[in-house]
Length: 108
Image (cartoon, rainbow, N blue to C red; front, top):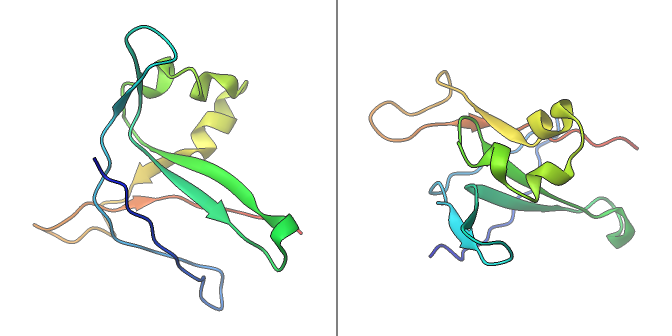
């Protein structure tokens, strides 16, 4: 069971990247036979604690996304798409790891 965490600071252009293992799905006991799709939690801080945003990133193609009760709280399809990282074969490391792209855009 992966229970790690990390910290990163964006570069001067606001970009970030990190390398980790892809988490697996896990059972969610709130509903009978319910599973959470593989996901990564993000906690983002701006210049002050009050500017914190918390979100989750899901992986493109995960069959559990459409049946996840938490994902289904998002009412529009574009909102769910914004939470889904896309496979980026141009950024992967051949014979080593896959890369996913997840853009986080903050206004303010």
